[in-house]
Length: 346
Image (cartoon, rainbow, N blue to C red; front, side, top):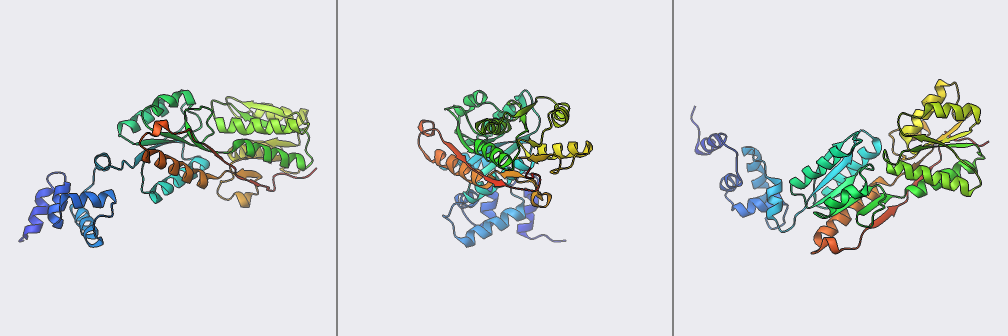
């Protein structure tokens, strides 16, 4: 079989990594033009862009995104640390952050981590992202405390996405967790409940859930009701809950997340208690698939808006000459109450 010249060239290049120069030579354009194509710049014609992309695909060329980004005047590669994406709330946030980054021509490199009680795994992930020369970081996990983020903030701009930030040194675009707690408590009281239990997650386990629970407790107190608090540090608090349901005749259980709400509903069913006939139950997040069919009473957190604002704010910080000198961003976005079928009037 006889090979033509182009086929021979491609065969030879298969013995080593294909370079940008190889693509430029094969496409009949300059190396700078190939670079502009992969940087997404508008300084090349559509014809040239299509030819370069086709040649790159034929040769199996994979651009070095980090090197290209560093060489560019616009460093648009950012890192994302995300808590367990199997959690529906974090999974949707991951999707929306990716979507927002793509819409704003930002490259997003992500790392996810699940249970990490010492936070060492999460901190190592942040170090790894910095080692990849990202220009900025989006931190979407509620379990890394502010003091552990400040050293990273000294190196690159950081935006928290989702979790409210208590430090005056870290930027944050977050859900209004206090509004969630207040609205849910007002709804439960408005349906006539007075003996109410609140499941409170440990601050170290989930700071957002802790804030929601605290807001519920405060709002109930404001309305003259002392909440029966079930602190969950380890395990699920079922023993405490059983006691509250039967000894204190609790009529409503308020949970800081929809995942915990489902756990409480299952537990009540195991005790032959009907929801909401025997006990009403609320959650928070409002983004579980099929939540409308399940009829869960919840609070829908504004995931899409938080993701979009977080990427926009980080992009704006990177566009400034002195991002560290910019005022700290503390943007909280309220969600919406979902009055479902798991709460009944008494």
